[in-house]
Picture 1 (tube, helix red, strand yellow):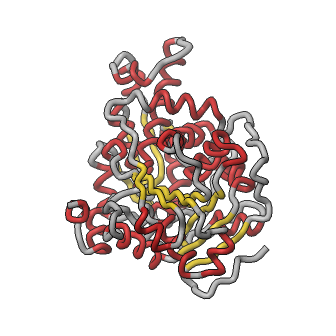
Picture 2: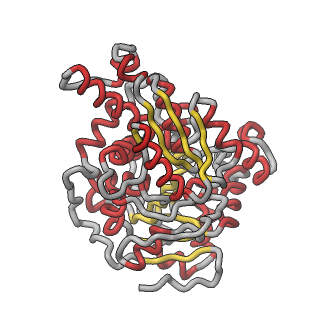
Length: 409
């Protein structure tokens, strides 16, 4: 079980020998990702003010340049004005924390998001503090959810989180505190602070004894997969989907959702990570969760994670067909390619993490051995998840040479 040989250090691939056969049925387990959870999240989130599906963009020019039949890009930049898909997860988990507290306080069988927004449980909401660790986007979602529903929020960031991303979190009224170390150090610090203060941790990563809230986050992410399925209602499913995999929460949610929806027709599932923060890649190689230590320094800030989520691993260990680790240079190239589109394609604003899927596809096009390992050929219909836009506008301008507004103009 070794990485696929590659002629370039820019990327490496690993084909998962433990991948389930395409026709294998998805196993629904108690307190794990399942159909009912996805359906409830879809019903709640689509009832929120400002909800609208994000576009699924066709890129025929880039598809032709990369030698594939079809290329589609789910553009999450406009999601609830937060700039990333994370708006679907953290805020939904905050809503569920408050709904459960309201039900317990009033002895009710059910409370909806709409009832919280109407202010009927203000005393319960105001007495609640939510917290989490973040690389930027998840914390922004939790802070936005706390502001939307009216509770207090404290967000912990590690020392490598940019000033722009910290400011974006603070704009939603959260208190932002720095923790020395990397993302996983911040996760542990947030958990300890919450235990001492009586706060509720709203994390997108799960670990032994902490599953329900990350499960809410992941079911929220499934809204994106449901939208994609609707947008492809009159087209065949993609043959490949490239999904960013930090702790694995998004990847597992998309994998499980597509598996439940499409069964044996589900896409070949490829996770994408930075070469310096490749815990999913290494875990698949080892056949068990592996922790990646160190600074996890990468421009793909949203993927700078060294420990796979327990919940995510339950899906990804068999649901992942292949893993790709790409270096920062490929991610920056992807940002620039999307900003300067091929003839007939729309211009797309993608952040460092948002372009990771394209980074892997670019690497597969440049390296025939890697492309063969992933099963990419002229008949491939590839889906990329544009997980974020210019979540740090200063970094985006520095990379692309233009602002998002200039690119889209």
